[in-house]
Amino acid sequence: VPVLVLLHGFTGAGNNWRPYVDKWGTKYRLLLVDIIGHGQSDAPVDPSRYAMHHATADLVKILDYLQIEQCDMLGYSMGGRLALATAVRTPGRIRALVLEGSTPGIADSEERKLRVERDEALARRIERDGIAAFVSYWESLPLFASQTKLPTSVRTKIRQQRLNNREVGLANSLRGMGTGAQPSLWHKLPKLNLPVLLLAGEWDKKFCRIGRAMRDKLPQADFYEVAHAGHTVHVEQAAVFDTIVMDFLNRIDCNT
Image 1 (tube, rainbow, N blue to C red):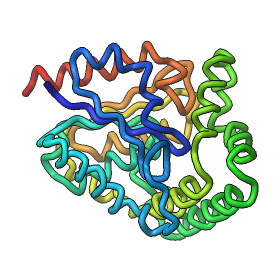
Image 2: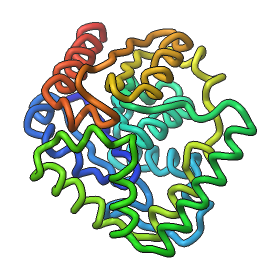
Image 3: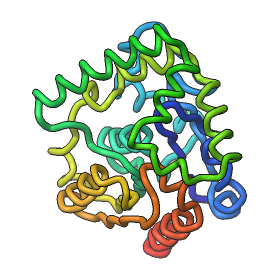
């Protein structure tokens, strides 16, 4: 049975993917991971423990422990950056990648430095104001404006999951594996010769641009701009997301 590893975004947890378990679990062995500092995973006080190379090593250790020689990996936002970094680090271990609203990092050193400074300020805000105040701020960002169209019950469930995180875990996640802190992988894309599915919502203009730029550099990549969705396509257009992802993975299955 093929294995599909599911990686959540910043402030998320593995159980964010529960709505897909019944559908996807009939065909795949699903592995829902809580990334370091999130959900039920440890939240160390040392920010360096959250560095991307440590996070990828954690994933590889999980695969080794479960005796999974090869898998497909799906990551959303921060989880997509982790999935991509893992594929780059372990050639042949990942059969195919699905990256939703994600990025290979920041190529420009000055821009990366500015992002590190912004993430540090955000980390301090979390530590100063606490989880509840931060979650309210996070939900108000333009990046998530389209989520206001979701049913109240769905938004409440997402908020409750975010509130279950810990200050130290989220703050250090920003410091250790934030978009600025992680090494840029843009220059690695042309040599990443495996099937990659890239998705972004049409209202998420920044990640649509990034997705197209990634597609142009990757040897085997498809990019989908999903209508009537922002950053969280898997929440805002769940049925469309399900169809696109499963069609992609089914094609991979047929070719292997």
